[in-house]
Image 1 (spheres, rainbow, N blue to C red):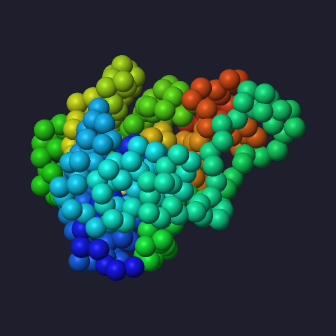
Image 2 (image 1 turned 135 degrees about the horizontal axis):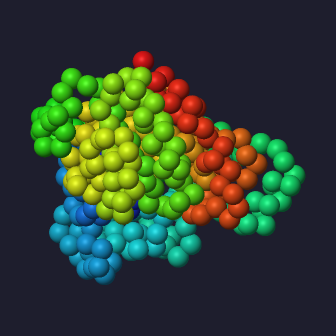
Length: 356
């Protein structure tokens, strides 16, 4: 393929997924070192890409704009190539209406016509299939172990497969985000100046997807108290606007700062960089912290760490060996055994291991 001068990457729509695209973006930059690469991303994620070595420019998606209107705006940028990371018809329509000569994305129904190259799914790709309540009851009755998948099934491999179609190296890399030291200092001064010389640990007890991904609050509290007693750490409690009440409860129990709903995305990133470890559910901020080099400790229940977990050897994954997991459901239809099977002692030990 001729080396394009101007590349548009249509970014994905969710925080954790966006982080999982960074290995592919780094490989894209490696393959096209002189190209001007623009990430076209939902407005809520635009600040994620600050200082990223793979990106020259960030454009924000207007969520209410029609695809043809978006395409008309993109047309003025005169891109040579579009790499479409989402699997939606709309994302392919946008670059089609933009008149970009080369339009590459994964082959999916209702959109292949709008791509100049529809890339076939990679061998070994795993689709996250939700289990029904009947499936779950049957698996429990039969018994057995939790379902696991090979490391090659990880979602980040999907994006690497796509850039490999352009000739880029498909070998995995660690996800990478960037914050500057001055951002970290500013966030510390604004949100937690009283931590002093105490080691700063983070706790992220929410999960936007649903309650099936949330380790019980009382266990977070018990684990945080024990860890604080053993390390003298200062806890910071994180979360979105929907987690304020939960975070307030935990912060009140352990005497920590509740930052849920109070930070911008860049401030959240800076505070994660400040933390020695983040104890978190499987959620977008987990991926952000891991990509910044902060060790994460994660109780996994309804989801699969092999498919969407943090990448890297310094992270601690905790899961109960129950036959119905992962079910990929938002709410547990039975007794929540996947999360109830993860004890406080396991989590405490994992956090202490992560900060050694």
